[in-house]
Image 1 (tube, rainbow, N blue to C red):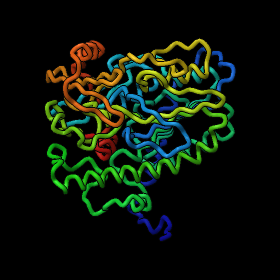
Image 2 (cartoon, helix red, strand yellow):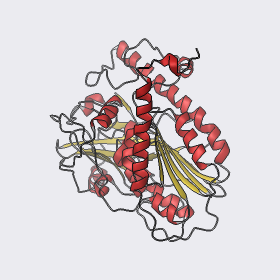
Image 3 (cartoon, rainbow, N blue to C red):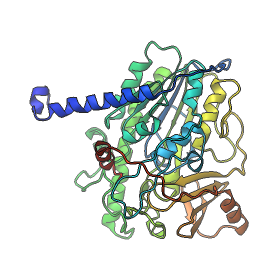
Length: 440
């Protein structure tokens, strides 16, 4: 059915205008917050003309985008967007950059971190090397994370991937050297891909609240056929959303791969009740046990698909575990001379005995996970819970691991444990937006 604005209803139209004005206002504030570059960096010979990072929010390790890229996996630094995206930009762990916030079980307001550190971030260095920078965010949280870090910011009001990518295309046109970060929210709750993609995946749309973090938060029963059917359809819905995203990103890659260093990954994964009984040992303020993200760093939440493609260069993580903390080092290694940043550049082999860390700094007590070789350990200091697992190609199997390995993994965890005092409030309007996304 085709209709014009007059058919929408006059009572809705003012809200539409107000919303876009609201977002434009905050985009301009973010642009004004950006610090001008006071020094320059030498660009590496043969550096790509353009850099593009595409982050698909809530991308499980078993949901690999259908794109003309070779995907592997990396460990996210955190189990939710704000600290993970901060780490992806700075190369620092959440316990080092401090962009974390906890919601206590009895809190009645949303906890949101603040960017208070003076740490370097890769868009600053790329700008110093002559790249124009742009951030396009499909929902509130990544925008709140990145305000001021790019020259141009676009705050999309929960827009689908098509709109976020269109904004980038328009901005990039006519620019000879660019670096951009695009954060897509199509797999983040509420998950609502176009109807044709839902139909292609055979999703039962009659099941209630399928796109939301709503049912079976603490009582998923693996032996109940109705519970299993609900999970299967929820996973189908996520696959349908990824089908849509892949169909939008693929034409863009066809346009830019010849002259653009491209990274496609997720900021964290998404739990669908894989380890609910185990997770119930740990204090969660919602509580949501292995459902959604932000909580315990199980593999479906901590590990994400990752691909990188560079013109005239081969950059593939090899050796030990890759971390999203390595992205700044890898990008700057490709683009600028004399880089100085934490993390490991994927231009060089990763030591096979490397330990990589994922920190859960969001709902209730802090949890940390360490990955090394085929082993993993999750620790909650407040609850005095330690979970050890052997890693398989697709998941993790909890049980006993060698004592020496467990001790090494415990030693690898950062010593800092957040005291849960870090908290900043957000506006009522932003609070409503975040609650609609499942942050409550």
